[in-house]
Length: 270
Image 1 (cartoon, rainbow, N blue to C red):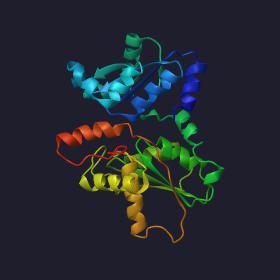
Image 2: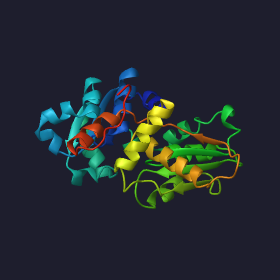
Image 3: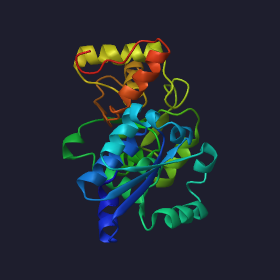
Image 4: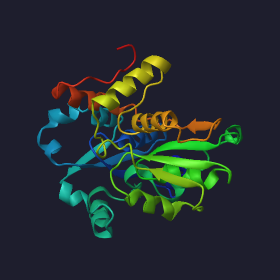
C-alpha cells in the first residue's frame, strides 16, 4: 500500500508525510515505521482529543507509543473535527500549521496504494481458485481484483458492519464479475469481538502457530473456516488466504479485554 506513495513523495521532493488514523490504527504504525526507514518526517492526525489531555494515555497505548518512538508527531483532534479529514479547507489548515507535506489518506488507500496491492499476487498464485482477504478500506481487495485471473474469485471479508464497502471497492476495481464481499463475519462492527472469536483465534494459533489479529485476519479466517465447514466451496477448491498483518493491534485489544475481564488473545508463547 505504501510503496508507490513513498516513491511519489520522494519524487515530489517532500520531506514530510501526514496521515490520519485512530488510536490503534495499523496504518499509523505502518506509516511511522516506513517513514523512519525511508528518511521522512511523519505526522499522525489522531481521532480523539481526549488523549491529548492525559499524556500517560499515549505512553500506555502500544500503537501510539510505537509511532512516537519512531519519531511520528501526533496531533489529536476531536472526533467531530476528524470527520473533516477529506475536506480541502481542513487540509489547508493543516498545511498552515505543519508546512508542506505529502498527504497519505486514512487507511492508506488511494490509486497508488491500489497499484501496489496489484503486485501482491504472483505467478505462484495462479493455481488458486479463490483469493481471500480481510477488508477495511477496500484498497487491498481492489488491487487483488485487478490483478487476479479471470478464472479466480476474490472474496473480501468485511471487518465493518454495513454494505457501503462494496461501493468503495467497485470504484477502484476494473472488474465486476470476479469478486464478492462477505458481510457475515464482522462480529458487530469494526473492532467488535466476542469470546467466540477470541477462542477461534487462540485455537487457530495453537493448531498452526500462525497468529491472527482480532480486527481483520481473525474475522477473515473465522469466516473462511465456517464457509468451508458449511460446504460453501466446490469440492477440491484451492483457496488462498492472504494474511495482511495487523498483529501490532493485539496488545491494545488485550488491554481492553483485560479491563472487561475477558479471555486474552494468545501472543507468542503465552
